[in-house]
Image (cartoon, rainbow, N blue to C red):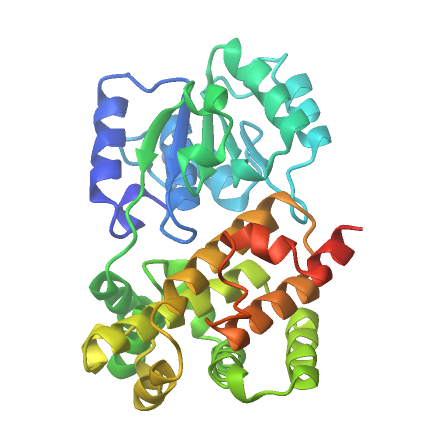
Length: 354
Ligand SMILES: [Zn+2]
């Protein structure tokens, strides 16, 4: 995989090529941006070109021994640190410290990719900070994170930050048609749902995942009609479902955004993300107070942040979210409080935190 296969990140790729040409890569890079916009693939492409035996004009040859080892994931000078479950374990950083005592094995530039670096907890982050304070020579650290503020400021400030843009609908749709042979209509719908992320677009090519999304959004749309026991059952079903809750919350965020659009103007298909729900969004929007929608959005963001940092009970979080949405504004509104604290005050969440 080379730079030429990365779509929609021309600015970042141009900067990296320039740095390569002038031999001016810093010792640590931070790639920020949404999931699925090419951060990891760009890091791997950079590792490949830095170690290629016959790179030309900033592109790897894809044929030499080094390129072939990189392609098979067996290159000793490409170290990948990833989270296991929710977090990057401290052991992984300690292991890294040990390996860095030795020079790169194959004489090139060792690349250490720390993917989802925001999932390091304090101990791991501090251990990494120690490494970055005195980086051994011939190593390039590449961290990925949604945003530089998701990291310790002392870590972020030691990296050159390159921001990856969300991909355009057009770029995603074109890629789906060209590389995955998706029909034009389907490609447009999936590209619209992808919210700028190619990896999300690819998950929606899976029929089962596509239907899971529809079910969640249909449940959310009917929330005001459900009896409390049905709300509890819906939260239970959802929390037991396979899938990443944070990603599911992203679907609800995009749906909330569409409700707001439907409130502000007579919805047109092209202004919506959830184009397949066009027929029902107007009627659903009419049942929600427009003031509740930004609150819902904020709450969803707060929940996603909390999921990154805490062992939040999925079921309790969903129960609290559904009940808040069901109650809406008014005397008993659960939205009047600042948002995440409001959720934390729910007995469900308190119970989950023990
Ligand atoms: Zn090569």
